[in-house]
Length: 136
Image (cartoon, rainbow, N blue to C red; front, side, top):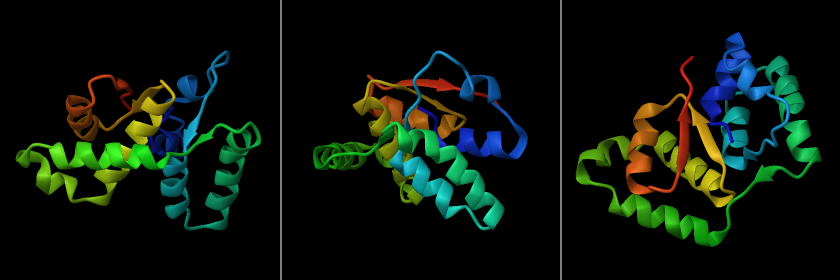
């Protein structure tokens, strides 16, 4: 499963193409990632690109959504974060990243991201989360 920033880097400059287009793997996308991508789609060209990107996931039923108990887990993780992270965690992007992390964990997937800051914090709280950092 890929974080939003991986798709954005791919769209902008084809970064991570070998990983995103790798054959022989089954890929899933988080509904949170789709939400973030659509929130940033400001042109018709961007919308067309997102339709193309999401189509294989939608057609194959590989858009992963969370259940209510996942949100309870997310709330518990968030409330247990050490005080030194509270300022950072007030931002919506951190909460989205926490949801993406739990989405990946819910299907046992490795999460690929460029965001070391957020996901190091999240992994410190969710030890079983599998993360691989991809450098742009």
